[in-house]
Length: 281
Ligand SMILES: Nc1ncnc2c1ncn2[C@@H]1O[C@H](COP(=O)(O)OP(=O)(O)OP(=O)(O)O)[C@@H](O)[C@H]1O
Image 1: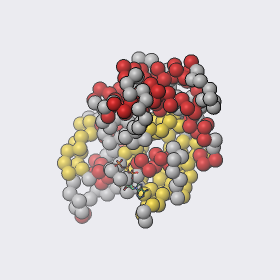
Image 2: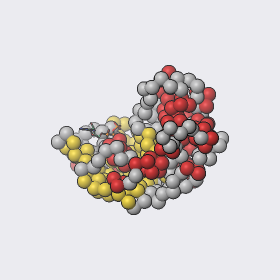
Image 3: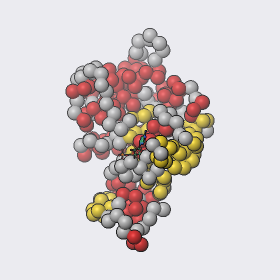
């Protein structure tokens, strides 16, 4: 499968960083002093229970929301001051449960990912069409290209929306649960694709709920809990039993070590278990 995603339009980057980012809304802190980075050549996992702030953080990193305090920098420059088109060429963002409401074809939907490269009133170029066909191929959606996107199944639609991000050939990808709803084969294909993109020098921050996929495919992970980073580092270190218990309130069974580890949530951990609580690091 060809994974050479339109490298000519990719904008080189040294990485994206959040420093001490907080966001207050609804009378509480949704994010509280979060610092994080993603660099070219790495797949970084963003993990945490429902409501811990993962999507909120991704929206801030994608410049779709403003933090109450703290900063986000791209290549060392504050993202708030950068040219929006240039930012869109560098950063690819896949929202959670991404969907298209327009009854257009999957191919036309993927072509929308080329928007940052279009001049006003210009027709799509050969490079645009080539990027779209490659993005369809690597997401195994070529056979769906002429279907109206609103008629696709949830997993098919997710792969098309991922193709739309890839069509822009971003240097850095911000992906909010890209494998949720995908069948096992397509989950693996998507994670293997991120791995190949990292080897090509691109970087990805990916929200995952599957601890085994995170352990296998992420170079580093951040674990969020109630808006704070409670663990970070290589999965073998950050996803230890104490962190999993404290952050997710489950006991997990671990089979194997390192990136071969299977981490399976196994039993519910009682809340308010007093002194036996492992606590978040
Ligand atoms: N505009 C808002 N006003 C008030 N609360 C908000 C707002 N946006 C999000 N929240 C709350 O902030 C918290 C974090 O939401 P967020 O969507 O970032 O969580 P998440 O970690 O992505 O969760 P999930 O795994 O369920 O997708 C949640 O409790 C959510 O209800």
